[in-house]
Length: 156
Image 1 (cartoon, rainbow, N blue to C red):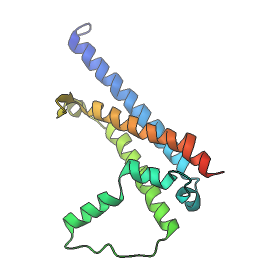
Image 2: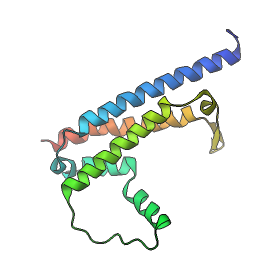
Image 3: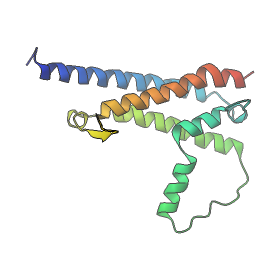
Image 4: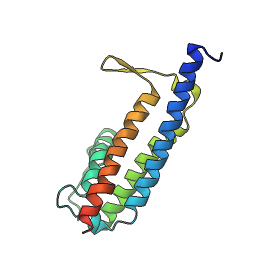
């Protein structure tokens, strides 16, 4: 009922949901716009952290794939393949955009029931909105690093 604590908490939860969906939508577009115009050479260039380095750090990838393969395959051979910069950049770009898209789609498609789920982290109760806000903040921190520092520095 309007004016009750329950109504206020539901309103605030929906407001937080809207904000995190919009933030992730903006970040998804920002990552896409900033990264798709880069060449593989620009992405792997690095006077400090390269774009590739920062994306590999912020989105997982290499170790995630190795772990998954070791868990799912019998003694996978990771080999000593010749490094193909174009292929590597395309894979990183696709995976990075997919990770940001996953965050956005997860937030956008949350149901009321899912929003009411909780978990405990370091003794604190966490909701999906809490973790999505943290995910969005982490993505935003690295996006701003890419857009404002790394890409301009490496395109000089």
